[in-house]
Length: 275
Image 1 (tube, one colour):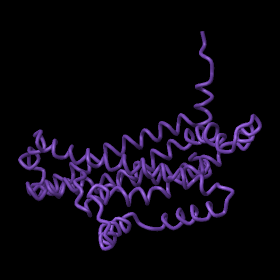
Image 2 (cartoon, rainbow, N blue to C red):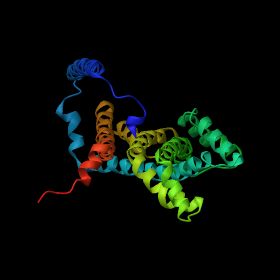
Image 3 (cartoon, rainbow, N blue to C red):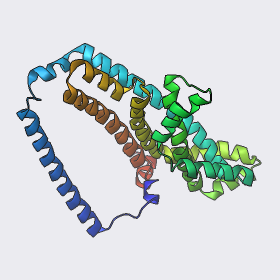
Image 4 (spheres, helix red, strand yellow):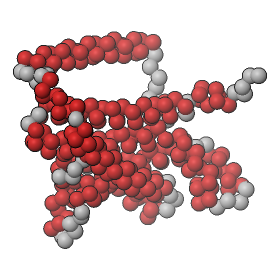
């Protein structure tokens, strides 16, 4: 899917990209060295300030926050993908009264920050008697926001399936709905799987907005822990490392799926094994 969004860079462009990457890496290393030096000068690297994070109670508390983050992300992703698929089918509908509302939703919601939707659920809805439980004050706005993104991903996947696939289904007597469900959607889902994983990574990071509604996700748990033990820098560095490991793992999964879906990888898998 990614190669449909931009042209492959040429030799000069690749060289410029490598140079920019090297310069950026050096700059980041210099900044990290300066930060470490400053931390050491202020005693932030002393062993007694890091030793609490070698104990199980600390990690159990943070892992509980990570579990709450994962739960909110999974439920939000499930709702957003279901709604996104319905919106994608709506945008592709031949009926204007379905297509226009679906397109309007996608185009409008894509321009609204997820944080604004959190504020709407947190402050506006209770004034009209709709006060959601704490968990849903985070999940609902995330699902609403990400549904628009998933809709575009699914729509792109459906449009990428060759027209002849659908025509073949109609030719053998399947209805339009059966053709979409049995032939087009399975192929589209495989093609957009890397993009779905990538969008899920962004959704996982958006769960940090639970900080606003006081939902005990990972970032909010880190705030409470830092307030309790006074180790502000150490706590947030550990929280950042947890986010880094989780998101990097999911990003690696997306790259692996994307690589498996390239034409060269497909040909390699189809090649018969030699005796």
